[in-house]
Length: 218
Image (cartoon, rainbow, N blue to C red; front, side, top):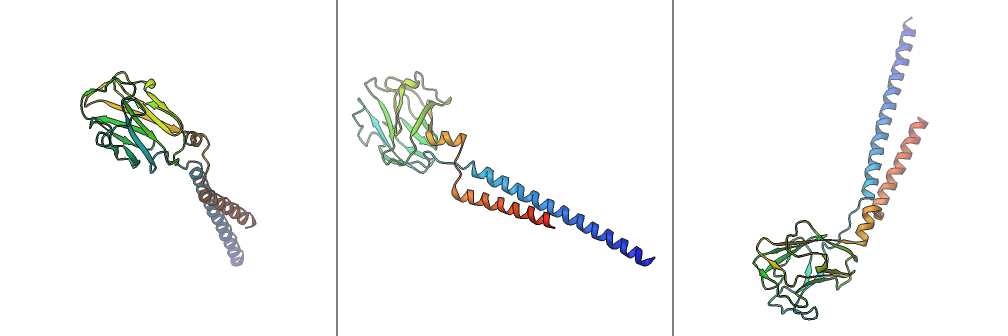
């Protein structure tokens, strides 16, 4: 009788052990699955900087686009985009320019009116050819300069220009422009994962397959 009881206890113990092992394997498989999903999401959301960290060339033009303002009147030259105020003197100490990855933000420091000539404004140019081609320049809603519209903006793949000749400003005036590139637009829809991320994703998938096979054999 005692032997039968002991056998029953042993069977129940083994069953409990198997149930516990199966539950643990399911838990490990779930953890691995979550890791694979996270790696997959990381692979397809890799960010790519547009302007941040790149050099861009600033110039102020007046009274025509071919005429460059003297350096003592504008902060002309190469600027590295780092999120700070890259252009401390847009022209005549009237405004400053802060360039971020996808935005150009100009804060005016004085009041006045830009002389109404053929061209009175600035340009940003990718002279080193390290920045993705510009595909759009739009006016951010923060802009409050009276009369400033898209007709004042010109751009191509390597250059952005603004001509605000004849427009007035004061200490509260802001001009904010949002910019985009072909690569940034494509990444928003179908980003290309980096090789290192794809390697991690593949490793995760192999690990998941190994755990599944081991569980089935057990």
